[in-house]
Every structure is written in C-alpha cells, then in structure tokens.
Image (tube, rainbow, N blue to C red):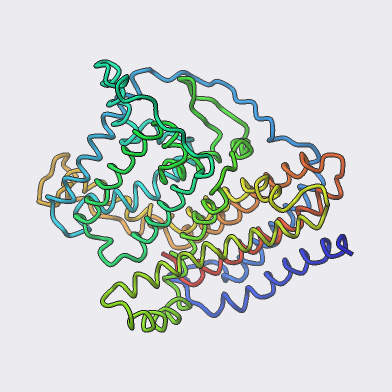
Length: 473
C-alpha cells in the first residue's frame, strides 16, 4: 500500500500543478507582457514538461553517482599579494559607504550607498559567486579588518594575553546567518526608511561591529563560515560554480559537484528556505494577492501599534509565512520519500537532500533580480564619480544615464524562466545523484524517491512562474 501511494501521489501532484497554473497565471498582469513572444501559461507548461522529461532522462541515462566524489583540478596559483590588496580595497570601500551615507546627500538615487547595498552587494555578489566561485573571502571587509587586527596582535604579543577563541557551539550551526538574512530581507522589503542612505550607513556600521565581535569571540574563519549571514549565503551560491579557491590557487571541479560537499549543520534547512522564502515574499509583496490581504492585517495591528510599526510587523509576518511555506513544501517531499523505504528516517533524508535546494535558491534570486541588476546596476557608472551626490565628477562619468532599454522585456522574461527551470533541473540532478548513493543497490527505490523530489521541484517552479507573471520587477 505504501509503495502504491509513493507511486501515485507524485504524479497527481505534478499534474495538479500543471493544470492549476494556466488559470492562476491568467488572473494576473505582467509588466511588459505585450512584448512577450508567447503567453505566460505556455511557459509554465513548457517548464513543467522540461522538468518531467529531465526526470525521465535522469532515470534512464544517469545510473551511477557522478558528483559525490568530486575531483578538483588545480588550474593556476593566486599571487600572495592578492588577498591583502583586495582586503585593503574592501576596507576602503566599506569606509566610503558609511561616510557617504552619513555625510552625503540623502536622496537615495544619487547617493552611492543604497545602490551598492541593494544592487551590487545583495544581488551582484551572489550572481558573480555562481559564475566564478566564492571570491567573497578575498573582498570581505570585516574579515580583512579582523585579519589585520590579528596580525597586529601577533606582532605585538597582544594575542597571547587575550587567549584562544571560544568554542563555537555545534547546536548554533547556521542559525545566526538565518536571523541575519531574515533581518536584511525585512530591511530591504518592509522597513519604511529602507532607502535612507544615513540609515543604511548606520546599520552597516552596526553590522560591521557585530561581525568583529563575533570573530573576536569565536575565531575569524569559524564565525565567517557560520555566523555572518552574507558570507554564508554567498558561499552557498558559489557551490554552483565550477571554480573554487583554496591552498593559494584556483581549482576547477565538475559542474554541481560543489553542492554534494555542503555540510548540513543545525539551521541549514531554515537557511535555504529563508533564501528562497525571502525572495518569494519580494515577488509576492508586489502582486495583487498580498495587496488584497495586507490592509486587513495592518488594520488589526493598529489597535496595538501606532504609525508604520503595524505595516512593518505585517511585512515580517509575511516573510516568515513564505519561509514556512517553503519548509512545508520541502518537508512534504521528504515525508513522501520516507514512504519509499524503511531504511532512512525523515530526519536523515532531510539532511542528505538539503543541497538540492541550493540551485532553486539561485534560480529564484536570478529570476527575480536580473532586471534590477542590468538596469539599476548601470547607475554605478555615474555614482563612482559622485558617491556623495554633491556634484563631483572624479572619473568623468557623473553624467552617465541609465539605459532602461539595454535589455528588452522579452529577453528578461527568457532569462527569468531559464533561471527558474535551470535551477530546478539542477536540483533534480543532484538529488538523483544522492539517491543513487543512498539506494545504490535498489534502482527502483531510488527512482521512486525522486518522484517526490519532482513534486517539490514542479511546485517551486509553478510558484516561481506565478510570481513572475503577477509582477515583473
């Protein structure tokens, strides 16, 4: 009976997603929809078909694990001076952002701080990390400051008087990073004064102090790997790259093999669901569904909260609801996989397959923010010449104008859909590879377990496409 249930329900779930989607998609508008070459519902059907065909192809053509034992090849060495030079530049850039935010104009469009924080840092760094690997440690200003302080401490003997760093509690895992990501998402999407350069500068200074305190207590590398929300997130995205950096060199690895080495410590599942869920809320908050629900919730909170606090609390609850929704979808797939075999518990499966969520997180990020990156990112050409917004022209580019037509609406739509579908196909591939390892002698069980993962991927794809059809930012 359990075997039949495991075989039937995934097919029902996939079909339901495909059937429900056209009606839902047609109920919402899309910015620039007149320029799209085909209707949105057709994209949804094609995306679902691609996922199903990928699932079938994986089952027939991918019969042996290929990613679990990655073999990286040393490509070329990195100059030893690269890290200190990049660190010094990063510290200078951090100082510029803080000073520009406080002393510069408070018009967010001509002050460099908001664009760097929300476009270059929050979107650009993850996209580059997917392409070239985890370069962030080289340009992490907080790590550079801590390493400089540690070097001075070693030279002066101060380190001996301070003692060794504290042991980082294993149960703490990546939970500090989860809190940090949710906090930043709330700042970006909900907080009333999120565009204020001064507010961003003060928050940047406060976060910098928090990171330095964490590194002082628990060690530079340990806190960076577990406690710094952005370092953790950027490292997660970088595991999709074919490049990695260690031992003073650049190494090449098989595509997607970096995902299989991702360690699942406490807080990892909430972290990845937060990465997907916060982006989901960003799209949802700009659509008609949230706009119809939000006012009634805000009115209820205004009985106990005054001013914008009720709006900000409502937004926070929306973010948390989206994260919990992502966790529920993933948990549904895991519980379904548990019915395939008595060999593995739901807890084991949850930890072993969590890396399949990483491509989905990257796909959601690129799909949602690609247009922002290619349009608002151009503003950096003028902002670097006038970072304070006071009329300076340091590099002669202060009068550069953003070309809003640089990338057409149809191209943006294609990139968004390709990012979503590509992320989910990649998630299927790494989950299939892990299933072959776990159910090595039972090909039928491995295939059955992945039918449930197909439901998870199709659900996320349909939801992502629905968000894109509701509003295209």
